[in-house]
Amino acid sequence: MNAIEAVSLTKIYPRSKTQALSEITLSVDRGEIFTLLGRNGAGKTTFLRISATQLTPTMGRMTVLGHDVKNEPLAIRDRIAVVPQEGGTIGPLTPWDHIYLSLLARGMSRSEAHARAEKTIEQLELADYRNSPSDLLSGGLKQRVRVAMAVATDADLIFLDEPTLGLDAVSRRRIWGVLNEIQKQGRSILLTTHYIDEAEILSNEVAVIDHGRKVLSGSPAELLHNMKERVRVDIVGSGFSPEELSGYGRVVKLAERFRVLTDEKRGRELADEAMKRGSDVGLARVLLEDLFVDLVGRDEE
Amino acid sequence: MTATRQFRAAVVLGYMLSIAWVRRNLMSLVWLFATPFSLLFIITLSTGGRAFTLGVIGSLILILSTVGTGLAGDATYYRLETKLQDFFVASPVNQFGYLLGLALNGLFFASLALVVLLPLLVYVGLPLIALPVVLLSLAGVWLFSSAVGYLVSTFTANIRNGWQSGLLLSVIVGILPPVFYPAEILPYNVLLFAYAIPTTDAALLIRSAMGSTHNLPYWSPLIGGLLIAISLALALAVTSRVARWRQP
Image 1 (cartoon, rainbow over the protein chains, first blue to last red):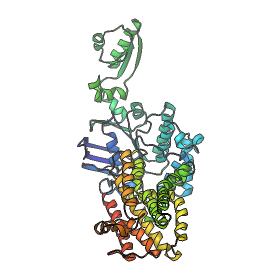
Image 2 (image 1 turned 90 degrees about the horizontal axis):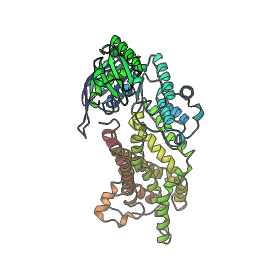
Image 3 (image 1 turned 180 degrees about the vertical axis):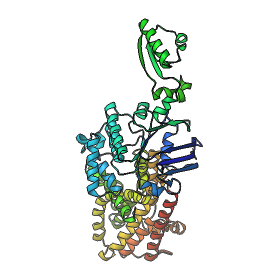
Image 4 (image 1 turned 90 degrees about the vertical axis):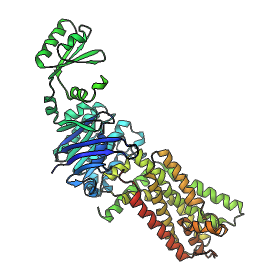
């Protein structure tokens, strides 16, 4: 049984008549980290909120942990936890209050809630702030508290909507570590993000959503394998014209640099040529970011 | 999650939003005193003390209805700003556990005023034997107002409208009905309408328990008690069917 199974899932918001999701079919295996990747407003949060039983679908079918989201939400809610997008913390309550009391409210015994809250405080490096009113915490620390409230639970499936939004690189990696630990316990995670490196590093599987439609899905390696270019060559300097570069592959202008996406052989040739002409050059394998921009960002280039 | 566990969740949530909050924010306990005690002061002063008892009854009812209707703002804040509602929707806590938690949080904030006003009510003539009935009717007012406040919050699209709705509801439920003034002065048609608001019945029940005789059409303590119970049952039924726990 999959953690999540969506078939032709469609969502039209009744008030605005906005179609947020259009016939999305995808499945999330148990024990995997599945990432929904997309631009702002692509429909990621809508998909997550329907899966987390916070929002009703308009059409299509979705099961979560084997239960229908529309008709059996109670059976699902016992086994899930969520970090909503852009939430806040509660005024004078401390990180400890947030984590420990939310676990108690979910029905956990005092001793278990205490042990889990202690562990999560350590994991997310909140120990120095455990008794500080959350009003006094920075935005990043508040976000860590909110993530802690969900990851401290014993839920089989955890939903995280942009969990690392606004966090520094060290904090993001800390959260990735915690998510990996959760996965090792056999629990599943559905994550939304627009940080592509996050999706690439963390996920077993990624689905790219654009304008409410699933554009592509698969493991990060599979997705990159399907891309016809293999390497990216970044060139800084005025030694080349775009026309000349386009002879090597697909050219993308990034501020003061050109990025050429191409195969390995031509990439090396271009890099050698660029060095001869004295340009700053970088040669690397293509990343999910290149595919993502290719899929959903061409209009903007 | 069983009913007992939902109740436990409500107590924890109530504690979280009130006692845990007040521990570091004592000022939160004071604001609630302002309106009811100002009204009590003005009524007592302007009637030369003759309406002091009515003022105490009114203040008591206004405080309990205000902490309930105030949920129109508070629950909107918790839904839109902190996303606390979303957090608990995706958890074993159900809508009634959440609503009761919010209501208990309000009750805590009202408790200091109750500690002052209930003994005062006994002092001005409420027999101790009638205290359970009075407490039951006040509990009815508190839960009714909380259900209405929460229900409104689930349809409110921004926080500012939430606070505004709370204030409006507070006037409709706690100030306009005959809680600070005798129901007898209301025109017949308006009086019948006022019976439908449980704050009216609670005020009449308390006055009745204090021996104040009423000459009101179609009203008796039994009918008043029944009307409070029916309003509460209706408010809870409408909330369970209409309130947006899960968004459409």
